[in-house]
Length: 245
Length: 245
DNA sequence: TAGTGGTCTAGACCACTAC
DNA sequence: TAGTGGTCTAGACCACTAT
Image 1 (tube, rainbow over the protein chains, first blue to last red):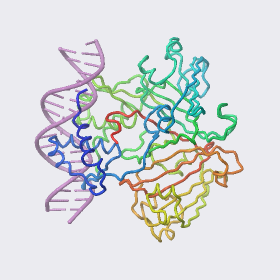
Image 2 (cartoon, rainbow over the protein chains, first blue to last red):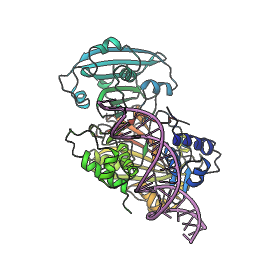
Image 3 (cartoon, chains in turn purple, red, cyan, orange):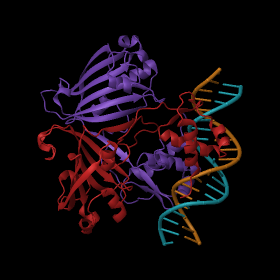
Image 4 (cartoon, rainbow over the protein chains, first blue to last red):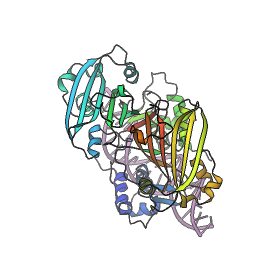
């Protein structure tokens, strides 16, 4: 891949002005000065700086300049960007030791047929998984995958490992976004059997995963022990045109 | 405020090509054609289209074109954009009938002093609030506000209503982002007294609110009845340069 | 190979901040 | 009023998709 100038310069600006947080210099040089310094046009500098704004590292004030943001505390398991449960377990400094996967075909629940936009008599694959760390169950997942998307060969070729990676490599279905509902689980009958009897606080994620076209291809339910894995969301103020829905 | 051309055109393109979701036309005209149609330069069209991409309404494939995304299900209480608890209650079709607010000065907890980046012997205002709907408690909030940021006059002038709005109007502190930790509350001793005795599933948000400079100015704890208010997060795949932290 | 979107340039004018 | 960032233009070349 050819190097993209503005991303390259964005990184250089970050390294030179932002990474060494000495706490003194707060303002960046102006666009004009930077464009001379890096021998590129002003628009390219603007794209580079915009990249840093999107990453939350700097902000700008019209008529004044670009300023470095104060360092905030770490944002480890950010729900804003898509990541697998496996990654989240690693971020919690837990080693995932085993994974028990169980596949079968069934009819979708009402909720599943609505979220996956399929008919109620369409078949779905159901994948149950228990993830453990230090021999204790940490996450219990149920994945619901429309049969018609993956066909009969799915059960033959998929064994274990990242489901989203398999869907991409084998079927060229790439998941680019997800909408997640977050729930607290307390009523005892909803708690999966593996967790029942214990008094863990449990979070439940109901996640619908979409391709770039906006087509739903996977629904997942994840029950997670909230005492060992923590979740964060970064929330931003909406700017510009608002919601024109 | 002067009208910004690319936002204006972005809206026009949305109205003309996207809002009337007849399900047939999936591809937008090319950049060149659109720039002629709206009599603007190609770069302006690109900014307009980019706006629609950021809103999740379209996507582009290099060498091919711009395409309309499939409609996904509603994303009501999105945690991605900042909104007040009051708004969330309204989105849940609940009318907030009363609010009991209680203010006093105290020392911060260890967690509060860390998140607010203040000393442990600095004073903080504590605001407790109970929000009810249909005479039942729905949300219990604790707000922690550094005394040195707002001074003695805070208790005199602030009575009730949106705290973030008051901070902006009275002190010119504008909250532009927040980092929220999401927890499930189950252990009985952590449940606020108003909720105890009942068997509601409770979600707890620990939110640190920042100004645009990245300075923390408010910490809030919100305990919410998850059976009446539901929360969603939109998660996107990270593109481009990744994390250069 | 033709057509599309992605990057980059040089220059202009406008809106806002700081003084 | 000078200097800054925000918008907009017209044109060039490159990378990718479709065929």
